[in-house]
Image (cartoon, one colour):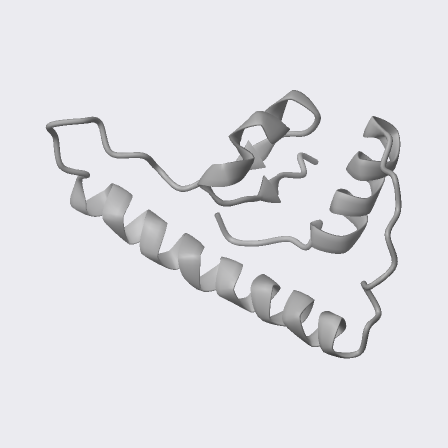
Length: 88
């Protein structure tokens, strides 16, 4: 079973560490299809839920400590924290 990380456009390089799903970018001078716009809208709604969870954790200072990540640590943390299944 494949696992993907949902990320915003700023994390496009993350695909070197783990398979990712990112919003569909518009090609310069062209418009996104209705299907691509719908995907981006639904994907954005799912990302908002994750961002709200991170905001709540920060309020409790659960994520306030600094930690130096290695590639393996980062991959395990991302999959463990954000590895929930979605209908994408």
